[in-house]
Length: 422
Image (cartoon, rainbow, N blue to C red; front, side, top):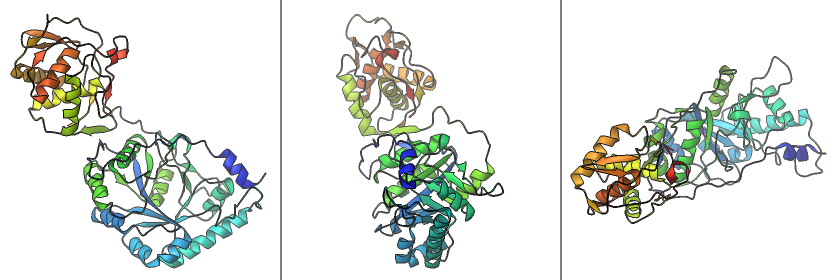
């Protein structure tokens, strides 16, 4: 059996790629959270990829450094661009193609020896250094066979990055030819929940939200930014909304490898219970309130991927603040624990000021649980009745409380769902 076949057989199975569909480039950033640990911004540059001038201009403006993973062929064709990028502080990493550089071309290919690996990587590194004036200390491959690890470590690379995941999504020590070595660290992609990998599946705010979710849950996360034009405004909006305000520790891949060596053996950090705050804008709340106000029983999903508990959180926040046009950051809240008996005889008129007072009274306690029975003026309403009444008040409709059913009376939380701020 050839090395190529063995690599393919041993490569970890990847989950199905089910990336969220792209939204409009001008859509609001939805996920906002601090990064749990280190984050590397990585730009793959092979084949006929264009120079990422737009991306680097934004990163330079905000003082962020990226790692450009280049093939030696791409480097030779874009020498001046890479020299300028390196002079600006960006890292030049080396991308090794198993097919073109190592010679793994098919099931019957001759297996390369350790010296073949070293020679191929040394040649690619030398050509890249000649084109850029900088010696790559990071090497990337789609998958890293044992001989590849040995060669990378023997040649003094600090980081070896792969499209595979690593155990527990933490960097691990590369296999070494002697006990005195072991300088390189194998760094996987980070804690992405689907099989789409670390490279943005498309340039959109939704894809950047996905990267934010990963950074909030893993100490070592790579975010791959495909070279593309006209993405500067979107990237800048994400950086100024998430990366800078939340003080992300953005590092180059070689720096990440060094930090991984220093933290070797340290206990992994535990992601916070509420890792990512999702922001929901005014237009969405109008659509959500409209559906709730018109439904009986209440819908399990009133819209925009929110459940009823999240809708309750949002409408209470909006009515308590008396700002129906604001964006709400969804927080943690548990659904009702019991299905209360309605105490109104039929349609019951309630003043808008009483609804606002109810919301103001509930708002400070929204980190707990939705109460099963809620006082509004002189009346007691079930959580479902109160939610529908708040939807009407938000829309400016007559605030008349009516009987309303929960969506699934025997489901956990009576079909409301839990809000965990995701």
